[in-house]
Amino acid sequence: MKQSSKRIALLLSTLIATLSLISCGSKQELHVYSIIHDEETKALTDLFTKKTGIPVSYIRATTGELVSRVIAEKDNPQADILLGGATAYHMQADDAGALEKYTSPAAANVPSYAVSENGTWTGFCVLTLGIGVNSTRFAEKFPGKALPATWDDLIDADYRGEIVLTDPAASSTAYLFVQDQLQRLGWDEGWAYLLSLSELVGQFPDSGSAPPKLIGTGEYAIGIAYLHALAKYKAEGFDIKLIAPPQSVGDVDCISILKNTKNPEAARKFVDFMLSAEAQELMSSLDFTIPVNPDAKAAEGSIPIAQIDLIDYDAQKASEQKDEVLSRWTKEVK
Image 1 (cartoon, helix red, strand yellow):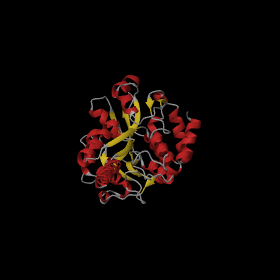
Image 2: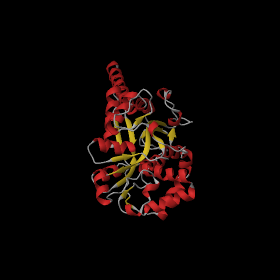
Image 3: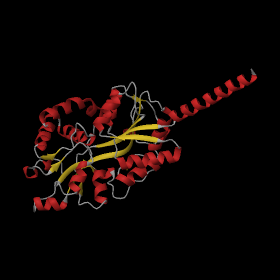
Image 4: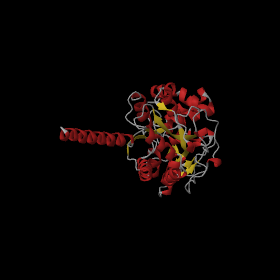
């Protein structure tokens, strides 16, 4: 009888230990939906794992795809974190009830424009739009012509087929560009501008990283993209001239915890990590983004936000208009 009791006790203790290990393992594994580039995602998640011991798996896809997935999965999320994407997209996910509230202690010194009022998203780097020009192709195609210096300069029949812009239905980069024009020019004039420009665009790829690559390799003369993405390709030796046109838009790449996350503790730790100077300096060193953490230094070659003329961008309006704008774009442009 005693031997049987000992055997049962041993089995119970083994079962409890196993369940404990499984429980701890599940709580300490982080799953990320990443909108930022694969190189940056891997470097950041590897550093996070090195510092915390928490393993990370991630899926990298476009903004539109991942935000749609986050909303569709809100009752049973398959990830813990949405990493990257401009504020309008995180607002969209929040409005759908797909985000968890968390105000990180690390956000105490972050500028107010990078922190949501209700604590559902936080910015970790500044994003600004610009124009990239392949100097060699431009000179060959348009000898003696001055480089475009403003957004309005792009509306030039000479440029037909030589401009590359991502599809705003898939890319947060292009949607930010669309909103830049609607907000700086007004609704009607903004749409007139966008429809005129669309007739000159040679390609609408899905990824925001495509225009810098396509102009860098000389397939197009002009590309519209984030300045940091253009700066990265220029630093790698590609033939790219950076232009920061006036009346541009400034926004932030955001991070959010997904509602009903299965790993809340690990998710909060990852948000804290992304707001650290160490993480933001690592990201800037890879893609020339401007950190929001005032203690973090931007990579040499990046363009400081103070040197860019920005409109008073209304991110809430951009979020509220998103469905209407993209529906009209799809009907009238593609």
